Amino acid sequence: MKRGVLIVLSGPSGVGKGTVRKALFEEPDIDFQYSISMTTRQPRSGEVNGEDYFFVTRDEFETEIANGDMLEYAEYVGNYYGTPKKFIDQTLAAGRDVLLEIDVQGALQVKEKMPEGAYIFLTPPDLAALKERLIGRGTEAMEVIDRRVSAATAEIRMMANYDYAVVNDEVSLAVNRIKDIIKVERLRVNRVLPEYIKMIEELEA
Amino acid sequence: MKRGVLIVLSGPSGVGKGTVRKALFEEPDIDFQYSISMTTRQPRSGEVNGEDYFFVTRDEFETEIANGDMLEYAEYVGNYYGTPKKFIDQTLAAGRDVLLEIDVQGALQVKEKMPEGAYIFLTPPDLAALKERLIGRGTEAMEVIDRRVSAATAEIRMMANYDYAVVNDEVSLAVNRIKDIIKVERLRVNRVLPEYIKMIEELEA
Image 1 (tube, each protein chain N blue to C red):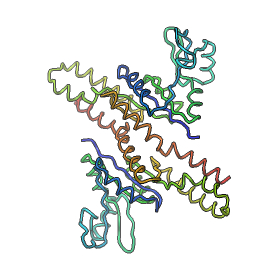
Image 2 (cartoon, each protein chain N blue to C red):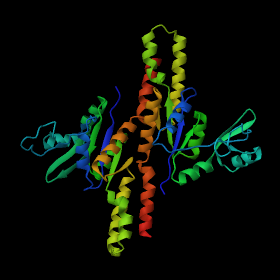
Image 3 (cartoon, each protein chain N blue to C red):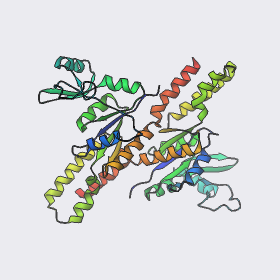
Image 4 (cartoon, helix red, strand yellow):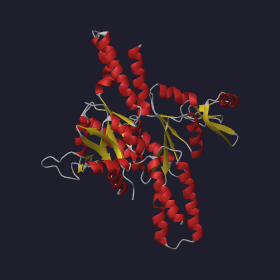
């Protein structure tokens, strides 16, 4: 059984992660499992356990944390939210790809525990166009330019922790780039080598 | 100017590197520079210096070696053959991708000097089908199976030095996989980060 690929889609807030993720899942030739979060908050009307979230008690969540079974978690307005490792592990082991859409801070936590994932940093198109726009205008106060530049610098620093940078200039283009990445990730030697080695070991046994 | 990507196409002898390389260059949407080798042998009728080879004297070749300007080289029937670094560097700096088709030993030498390349290992389809065929037959002498297995093991060991494994089951499929790899290599953070950093530095200057 060929192990699935963990695809982590992340990037600065406001870059359009959710929109790109939804568009990806609408592609006919894509068959990801979406990483389901665990939470201690009450299910809202219509929400299904194991589909929208894994709904658990505070005790259960804290046991997961204590056992090191949360890839990342945070507390927000009195409730825990996090990414359970076991669900992702089992899905990958069953040969299915998993997509995790997550903010930059969460992605870095996940990477510590699952470095084998494909980490995609969605970048705002204006970062690429920043220089042209700022210079082109010629009217920007130095203060404004400085603020933009330091925001861009901070973003670039985060990008360095990722494998891929995908510009979200147009959702359909970003989606195609991500689809290409997933196709090519399956050809990476670090992914196929274990299979070959296993085959050889079975032959030698 | 965005730096070109060095694509190193390699694999065991007989795997079909030359056929795949030729098919790649026939693709309408591909614009590589083929890495031109340097040699001390005499040009044959119709061969053009700087197109088929860089034809040089023994002295000139040995000066290149002494200066560390050969990515790899070998002596064969009294003549030197090698890959000059400067030509590749200049082409990449001009923003053009370079394809280098080379045997496994040469590829490993190139990788030491230019680790930033995309190293593609072309695998024979029978490696993937090895197990099925050997078991399926059920008639193979243990000696033959052992020999096949140890050849496969040696190949797998070489593969570990590469970034991608592309099965050459069908030339057109292998070509498409390589085209996908090149597209996606351009999205890798280690390739785009220097550009972003440069842009930021220019903004801050």
